[in-house]
Image 1 (cartoon, one colour):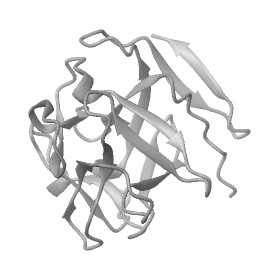
Image 2 (spheres, rainbow, N blue to C red):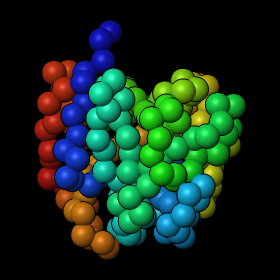
Image 3 (cartoon, one colour):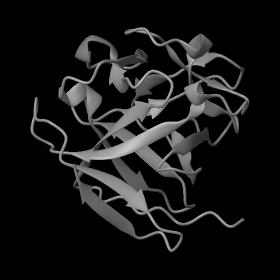
Image 4 (cartoon, one colour):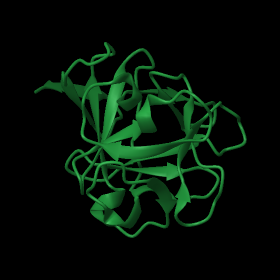
Length: 173
């Protein structure tokens, strides 16, 4: 099965929501520095829960935190390695591949480790760590990517649904 090419508008913002917990990807305490943990937290619309995607020349995506302009990164390739925000580097530790599953869900694969973005220990709690892990098909590794307003504190506007041709269809919710 050939994966569609997902095209994200780099000028739009998205929230990334875990299927298992229904919580959003979040930069801990909206901190601005490097190596700040990426966690899951109830969605509140802060810019530390909003992400912008841009495509690299090799077809991977960079996922940038709206509040800090730093990127989702994993600096270690081991199972359960922590995911953090960090300045961009082209060494593969900040590059990801978004792969379509079904029912509007995606898995997010780390380039250099070939492991997947996962909520640690299948947790449903606020502040649970986000790690990379070998694919196990658990709901802790499945994500929704939902377009939101780029304004801090604003609510959900549309959900991005991608066709097999890679074209986005935005559904108002």
